Length: 168
Length: 216
Image (cartoon, rainbow over all chains, first blue to last red):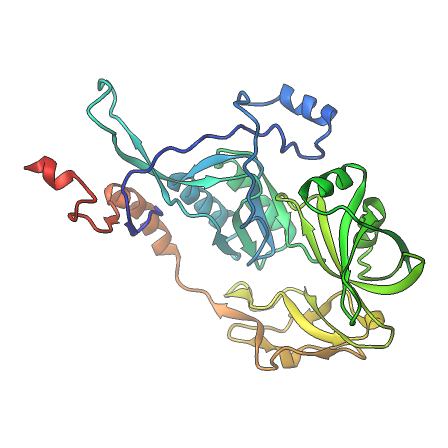
């Protein structure tokens, strides 16, 4: 699984978990679209979603990309699961992984009382903001890429969509 | 040629741009060809229609004058859906301009099952008059076999279009596929075994970490 080779500090602070996807409703940001979307939401809204991907939000290497629409932590396990799923669904394609789990997350063992310092490093995650391109595929047609990304999407902890390279 | 009306934009800054976009208009800037830089606003719907029809060159009416312009850069929001800003450059009729044009790969390479089709270039820099800028440069890849590569010199340019890229640059090719079946299984097994491995901590033992002290 992916993890950094060298780090300055083993344990990081958790950071502020931003709100969910109130402002990232696909197909429009109007009140009607948002109302409809909020009816079917999976998680409660914790606050305004202000974090947006200001870089790494376009298809840069391949022809198609899988773009996150929500904020979230993508664990190294999920990245690996997505890579295997894409590799099996589109064996002839070239795959790029555009995110890396730089952030460590700690956890305490079960049935342990609180206190006694911070827990041990449990997993490594990538902080994903709406717009981040997670994977890219090249050398395949759109149908194959869509099929592969559909498999990958089921492994992702946030809503995602497929995008194509944008030419002006 | 399509004509678009623009208005001179006097208010600058983030808040002014927000309110402009909310009113259905799009901030834009026009420069080049020795003229002054002008801040403009366009009708967003009209400009989206132009982009949808792949029109890069059009006439712009503003301040009582008319000028041929070329779309230089378009900025989108974080999801790549909403237009945020447009850069336009003045383009004189008959005078060549330098732009990058996407490559359109046509066909299915015959060496694909054995090899991996890799695109090294997605766009190529060309020089052409505004009216003769092609929508894309077509690259036929039917005959590519394993080990074959296409260079920029192999590209067929339309009439009146000059390629500015280095002729020796590789456009695409088919690389022999490595034996991955055994390693794929190994990687999955490796994922479990490396789970407990920890990264090296920079500066460990110089006071940055307190673990050695706890051990004593």
